[in-house]
Length: 175
Image 1 (cartoon, one colour):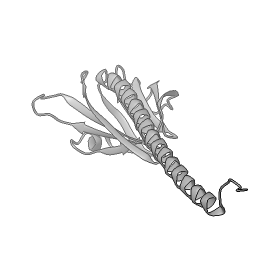
Image 2 (cartoon, one colour):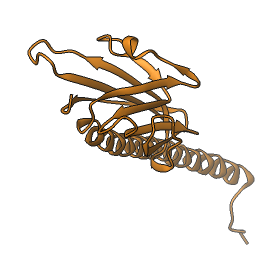
Image 3 (cartoon, one colour):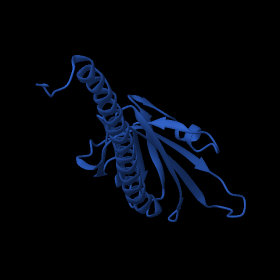
């Protein structure tokens, strides 16, 4: 009488082949998950940057000028900030509108951009967006518009060690 079954060699070979197949499938899913996470992070940072820049642009358009810009506690002189073509890293920037003490203030606190209205030194409380690692401000001058002022804003976003940069130029209409 013959006994039917698998030999030890057959079992070991089938186990080896199945572990290779499972390893390939597993590595395929891991690489797809990393790609999905990268696209999701990039999309989220893009959305946040566009929302922040669009909100800031709306306020800058209504402004008269930059009233203050600073990194940590170092204030830049407004003469320096107004020199064309130089990008200044800032964590807080104020744009003057209306009377002397009316300002739109944007401040980065713990990678979150906050917004407020009032004196240029207020601490804003309204959160606009997350993932902001750095913000840069520069003044652009265009000779074709004699007295026009334009501000270039640049946001550097960071999420899970992934970086994203967005910028926008805005003309100040009320100068």
